[in-house]
Length: 354
View 1 (spheres, helix red, strand yellow):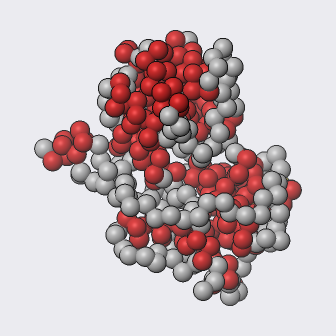
View 2: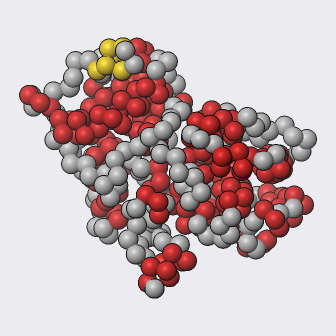
View 3: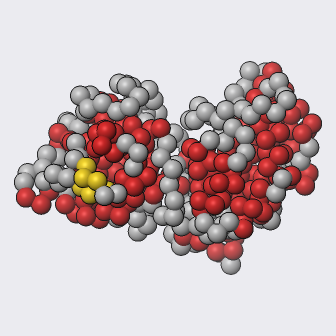
């Protein structure tokens, strides 16, 4: 049993790795990690589809994939994004101000248990009934009892807005966004980049978080930006890009991500890899960005001789089977959902049944 690279060596001809690729007017020379990127994407998507179909393990014969935790190829298919879609964005009041408030409240903590705690203690989460005192009371009590309020997935630095606790400063940040007109300015933005710049203007929201939050808000029915409009490479993606192309790609990472999205069919075909996308939806810029993060992790074991930027050499998270049913429900505007499909919000499921 070998890794993706060992089990699927190129055997010549059309599946040979290209000597160079042209990106932003520069010739980049791919490393072996470049083809691993495509093999990983096909294998990881196959695992997702096997789980969705209810097949029993093993879902892969690759020991690295089987042993370690990797996110899905499609960001919207991941567990937290599915919770955001079904339990946050498309549940509750659908006025844009409420959707904006609920989405960013959830994402500042990025933890399902924190959202359930607030919903259980305060009832329906909405902006017009929000008070700092009530939300702080619930969160401070949970913190005092030793509960973790934040996900460890990524760090959301607290702004310095005069409060002594991280969660209090985040509540103040959300208040600032709501009262200064951020929801309206995001809704009126002509492009995804313009919406991103609105969020980027607030304390503690650097480029990575502002972009991720823009993607989250864009799941809502009120926004209609294409996920092919704009991309901001995060630190993990930059590591993966360095491993695929070396230092020559420094400074043009966003162009590299665009190249990957534009050429995906070519490379899946060249390598003979089955990849039907997400119910036919090709990889978008955000997905290609995330895949670079995951391939960076995979390459720490599969290609230990190829260095990234961070110098990390281990994959920290081991795979643990989640007993919860896999959800697969996506923004209706994408046209991917079937009637009363996996994890559909109750309101839509009822409407689909007539």
